[in-house]
Length: 162
Image 1 (cartoon, rainbow, N blue to C red):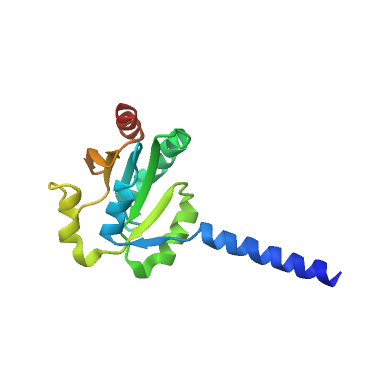
Image 2: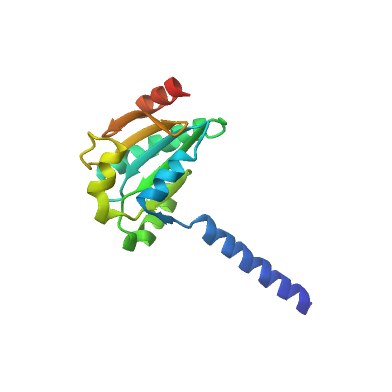
């Protein structure tokens, strides 16, 4: 009985650990994000830059999740949400992810001090406002959207580029 209780405690502890890992949020710098984009070969990668404090960003996220759900099993599709919240707000972002049931990969871009360097590297016309959505195919930018995207716009853009 003592061994059974020990095993039960161990399994319960592992399930808690597994839950924490699934709810973890990776902090990356620009170079790591750029490498992540470049490493998505043979895929259409939808990258959305957003923040928990940006009302238009929060407004469009449910539509992004509907579209992600529709395409998630397509072998050449992937969505990545890039939070521009501050690194010190990591726990707030994790809670937001849970509350809003964001069902795709979310990372936190921890490179605020170099914004003026990396923003124009994504697109020379990007002035730093969010939301911004960029689609990459085989690591090459195929679409840049400055501002909110409706569900229909996002779906049409994905279908056009898949």
